[in-house]
Structure formats: structure tokens, C-alpha cells
Image (cartoon, rainbow, N blue to C red; front, side, top):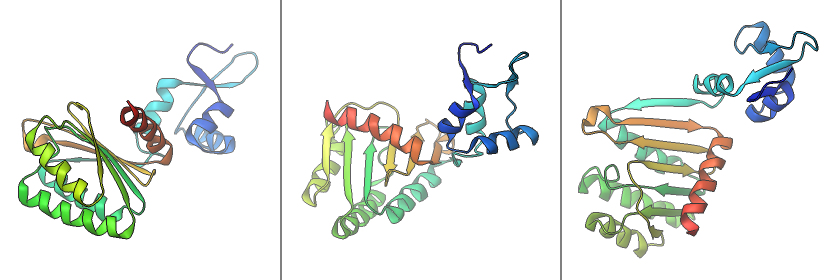
Length: 198
């Protein structure tokens, strides 16, 4: 009998975007093993089990990186790879890595805008440095909304890739998650739209 918080094979195939036969194959390979109902023999998957499977990076392609230097590399790469849109929610703790580096990102943005890429930011404009950057961006067509966003930088690139940057007092302990999954990106995009529209 199905318990609360359990999902059928057809539900799980929709959640993680694979055919039910793939889930049966993974069961045989002992990658994702469901429980079986003793009478009906139906397969059931627990929510935590699905979450843990995805976080192991089997499907959602999660990359984990650490450190201040990787922050610079990730932001450069993000701007070099963007094709159409980049929405970013930033906070005061992690949105700047020095004026020289900000100027590099500013120059990259200008090139992207000329190519037709659309960009939007949510920043706390009560912070002078955030306001200064927002005014620079406004000069060449990037919109900024004034909202207090604490603790994280989240960006959504081309509705496909999410970058989450977690601050730390120790620069080497700064954590980066790069999630290359359009379903995850879509969820973050909906969150961004809600914040933007308030």
C-alpha cells in the first residue's frame, strides 16, 4: 500500500525526466532501488530517496567548487557562455571581488548587450557600491530592482544553468554550486520572477 511521501514509477519518471524502463534498469543496477508493495508488487520511491539520487549528480549535473579564485573564474565563464538571458540575484557579501575585476565584468557585459543578451539584477541599492554598479549597468541597458537579498548570489543563465554562490568569512571556504539542469533552472526562474515583480 502506498504511503505518504512516496511516488510511483510513472511519477518519478516525470520528476527526473527519464523513461520508466530507465528506472527499472537502474533498479537492476542497484543505482535507485524502490520499495515493493508486498501484495501488488508496485514500485514506490520515497521523496528523500529521489532528492539524494539527484544530489549525487547522476542527472542534474551538479558541480561543486570552493574558493575565492573559483568565484572569479565562474563569473567570467558565465558571461562568456550566456547566449540569450542572465538573471542575477545578488547580495552585498558576495557580489564584488574588487573594482578591477568588476570593471572586467562590466566590459564583458557591454559586449553581451551589443550581441542582444538580456540581463537583470536584484540588488540592495542602499549599499553605495551596489548602487554604483547598478548605475553603470543602467547606462548600457541592464535593469536593476532594489530588494534586500541576504547571503547568496543566484544566477540563471539561458534558462538552463543555475549558479549558487554561498559566502564565507574565509575566502577559501566560499562555496559554488553549478547546476546544469533546465528543470532546476526553471524553478529558480519562477522564484526570480516573483521577486522581480514585487
